[in-house]
Length: 102
Image (cartoon, rainbow, N blue to C red):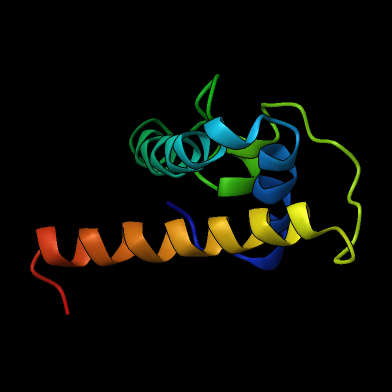
């Protein structure tokens, strides 16, 4: 996927905030995988994927409903931010192991 920036994490966390707790982790993982697939699509065909965007996590997240940002006084939002960062780290580590990178 494209380089992940602050806005990508915020947008993905907001999407997660708008769904039930029990679906957040699977949706988070799905958005990461879709963003990566969209980036590969973009590199191959030179255009954004119709469903998943241009390969950034933000463009993938923006294909879903994004509620307004509540701020860090909202513990649910903090948890969603934490989840996105954790899942990104887990995904990157798994890719490094799979592809023999350190």
